[in-house]
Length: 277
Picture 1 (cartoon, one colour):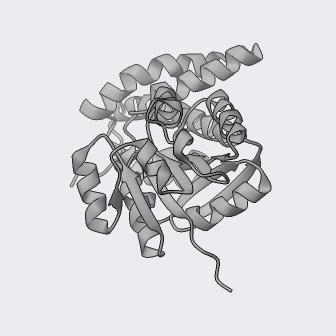
Picture 2: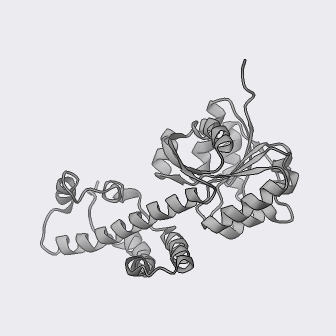
Picture 3: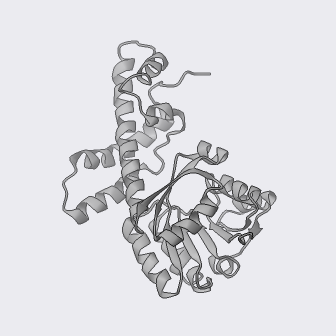
């Protein structure tokens, strides 16, 4: 006996969403997309995805929704807004939040969804665009066991690893801690690179040596694709969590300020950890 595949709707098909769509279609899923960019929609349409005009229209033809928008406000707008997806979803549907947002945001959405007979899967993703291309993302799940089980069927098409961390909200907690450690290390790489360069050392050779020692990090390995684009938002989430818990996090506070300049540095004059072509 075969299980009927979920009808998947995805909101946000940018650089990460496009390969996710590609892998889901490859595995036989019927995928419908919504995005503010016509170019993005054209690309996924070429892959075989259907296109909906609004999140509400998407909800009417889907029973498993993936959110890939950028900010908490956008998550709330596409789910709970005037043309939001939640009002159009059938009972028993799932909204999987793969956006990186505050744990409070997914908890509030889960409460609203369950009031309508639906569920939220807290499902932020890690590892970046190159891993998305290869279908080797990491998904950090938070949710009820039966919801997680349904989510695994869909996410395993583009995520080689899935970790169930606990309840709704815990996926976003895990993503926030992952990103906090990423940006702490990435700021350290700018400073270490500047000091090392001042000595005349060959920085790519130093990188190779550090990758064999205790200085090894994923941030150092992935230096080429680090852009700091979302770093400030990530650290603002951490700061909010710390404030709510009444915690003093001086390192996190410093990194929150440092990533503002780090984005410019990485784009214009980064330490030369990479060998120039």
